[in-house]
Image (tube, rainbow, N blue to C red; front, side, top):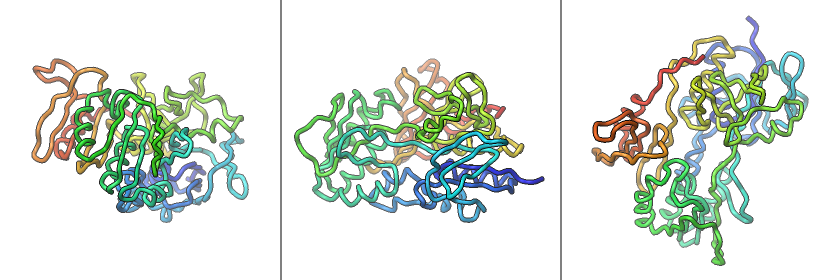
Length: 381
């Protein structure tokens, strides 16, 4: 059977895995990938975790796909517009328009950049600039105490910089933990000499050598919103495209848009029970691209829906979170061979309840057990 023509806008983890999944499932048609950075796909987490180490880590090194070996046509620039066309979609941004039957939006996220003069960290070029500026003795101000902000604080303090962190909310990693880990991170900050200002907006007359804004990111949907011929797409609470388990994008009226898919940071998945799975988590990207590729090729879908995971390296610790922290209930703490875990459960704390989430600090074995415990056997239909 003659292959399909598929367009993928974005060459990060989601875009690469989409192309690789299509090939692995036997798709032999033309695949075109638009790559705004013009760089071989690389892993973004090391940009902050390994800021002063080897922060450019090609995804091909982990067996996730080699863009040069997948037989795809790469357009080394951003797509400028998309619009429905007869039998599929037209994408502008190459030397001439490209027509595809199916179009996958994998444009990722864009960091919030609202503070004049502040640096952000999202690309390899951003990391290269920060590594040059953050030197021993430099005065570094970081706005935001989420994952990126705390990782940069750890790296900069380890480099010998004088680091201060401002967080507008009352908690460290507030969006993830709702205040449950404040004492732990405060201890790490203090030991590293990092000054912390919780519940404070960034206002200071003390001019730093380096100012970094790490107040989160938003789904990068500029291409979609700037293309008026597309039907109005449904957006989630955080402003991401809403898809089903197959990756299909929906209109505000609740209808799938023919031939249009989205995966990765720019998409949230509505589950069969009506709840929303936030896009962007590593395991989520792998599962979502596999399901979308299965839908396109008519091949076998993944049996399971993996829980979200976050990995971090900070203050000399390997940190991992699997699952979603509930808004209430204090976690159980348990010491492990090299570290400890915090376990959130539903049900009665005294007798032990159903695992909701686990934070593992230097505890890989316990993380693996929690991952298996949390895996949900949901059909991909």
